[in-house]
Image (tube, rainbow, N blue to C red; front, side):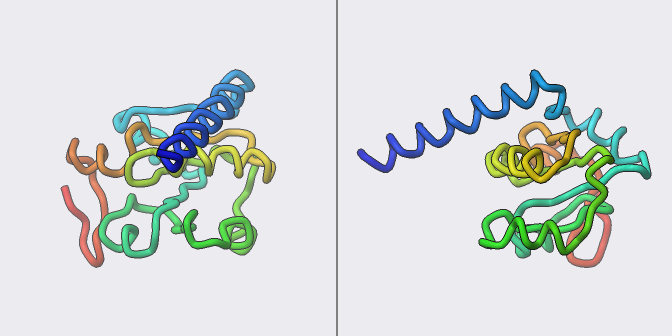
Length: 138
């Protein structure tokens, strides 16, 4: 019973933080259709925050993989040296990890974070283009 209470508290805390970022104009959640329009802009960053295995299974063209669960997210983010003045698109598998990532990005100086509604699972289910280990799917 205690783990369930902890999970509820963590998710509630994450959602409160996201509402605050949304009010500040930092965080935006977009449908796959709108997200795709952002991707076509060359002046963006796009980060896949899933594990490497999930990234290899399927990822959006141009996305860099920075594993949120890897234990070194902040260090890995610094190493890829993204321009924090550009809009930064993020996604995970189901949009649970990306909420935590949005807060971390804001603390790291990123001022515009765009999240994929319902994550990569929704993207694939709606048949938007993605790469797997060596080909593009349509």
